[in-house]
Amino acid sequence: MFRKLDSFLLCLLATVMLASVVPCRGVGVNIFNTLAIIMIANMFFLQGARLSRRAVMEGVTGWRVHLAIGLCTFALFPLLGVALHTLAPDLLEEPMWTGVLFLCCLPSTVQSSIAFTSIARGNVAAAICSATLSNILGIFLTPLLVGLVLARHASTGGGGGIGPIVLELLVPFIVGQVAQPWIGAWAHRHKKLLSFSDRGSILVVVYTAFSEAVVQGLWHRLPPMQLGRVALVDIVILAIVLGLTRLVGRMGNFERTDRVAILFCGSKKSLASGVPIASVLFSHADVGLIVLPVMIYHQIQLFACATLARRLGAQAEGAD
View 1 (tube, rainbow, N blue to C red):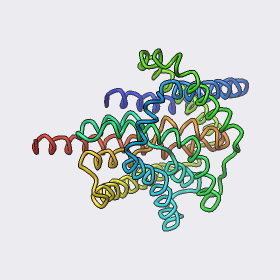
View 2 (cartoon, rainbow, N blue to C red):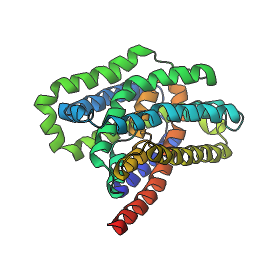
View 3 (cartoon, rainbow, N blue to C red):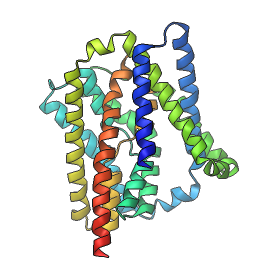
View 4 (cartoon, rainbow, N blue to C red):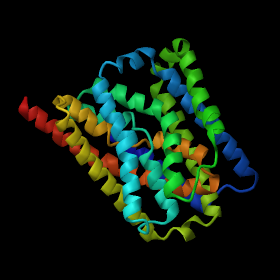
């Protein structure tokens, strides 16, 4: 599991390097932009096709856990991002702060949230339902939160409006849900094959976004010190959220297994959803800079939560 995730990160880094050395130009820009739109729509279509109605209905039963995770994902994170921006507005350049605030508005991950919950011997069923529900709500809530947060705390606004969000994200997802009774079983049988489609769409979007950014002078606009500061801000955000999610689990008198699910699902942010949503919400010239904090946070959360999950799993085995 972790090797696959790490290999994907290497592919992301290779894509960024390729875009830095050989960015697409001229007619290639239109070709890659069109390809990115098609692949994003296909990704959300397959997400809808793979999600069973039963999973949605089962998610309702553990509403306290889902509510806690949802509040951490869509309330705690944005408030924390706004607070950090208010306290240290000059720490990062404005496009980087936009990326950090956008990161705070994203839904939770699915694969890593479930994997870490399982390793830590938590409530895997709740993690599956909450992570899935988070990604569904993210289609609606992330653009709304981005609009609210960036309208007051950043100069780089969204460039797409509601139309592209509906056409590229929501409509394909709904169509996938409608088609789920007929193709859902096929989608589940070919999870590995379809995961290449998901990751391929992210790589295409990243290449397109970074190509545009490089042509606009990305590496001249972004000193190396800024990357270190972005990583520091991401680490601070993750550390605070991990501490607060543990506190929420204890103060809410949740069972241990539920506390584990809240800890790992409530502290994750989805790179898989973040890159496509960014390409819809922001202008192509800004997407490359804006997704950098998301990519950095993605790797930090994997390392930190993998270590934490193994420790909690060992503690649970010792208690047994």
